[in-house]
Length: 229
Image (cartoon, rainbow, N blue to C red; front, side, top):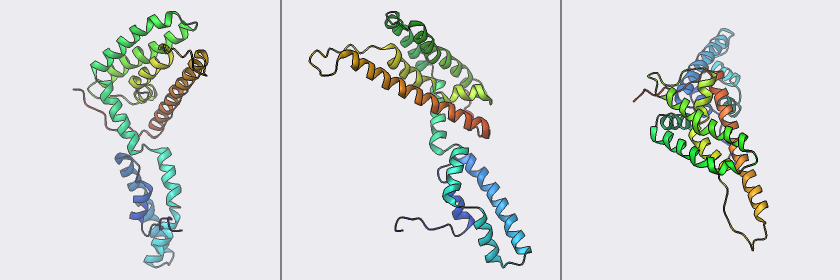
């Protein structure tokens, strides 16, 4: 009870609590929709004979639990952190230096891949995340209008191809040349556990990008597009 937050006493407090972690454009959209719904509800209750205060309290109760609403909005709209993350992705996507670094890393990893039993699969993956996606992201970010709307551009944008490229290089192209002759864990087991952990992180990050892309596309809640420099 000591740590339980008090209930919202008016629609302004309700909106503040429900949209605290939502990005600004979506927060404004939610505010307009909720205030319109709240005003309509108050008018309905006044017409039904309730006093002004009772009508406002009844309309506020109809909005539902603020904590449930906050969770629903976070699933439906971009959070402040997600909007900042996308802004950083846009900035990195336009950076020619990072694009060149990824190309260089791809070329350097080819020697390591030749000795791999799964050469083709790893080559395709590295090419996708170190060449194809970064190049496409660079082209789209450099457009005068920035990234266009739609599933594919949004997915490319959310994948943050640079971060995934670095991670895929470590997880699929780099072999840990570590000599552990006296270690309790054999080199083979060490490599298997490390590779499995890195691949798990890689696919978790990719799954997050897919989920974020779906949220953006479903809600059409696109952040402001960066202008070409």
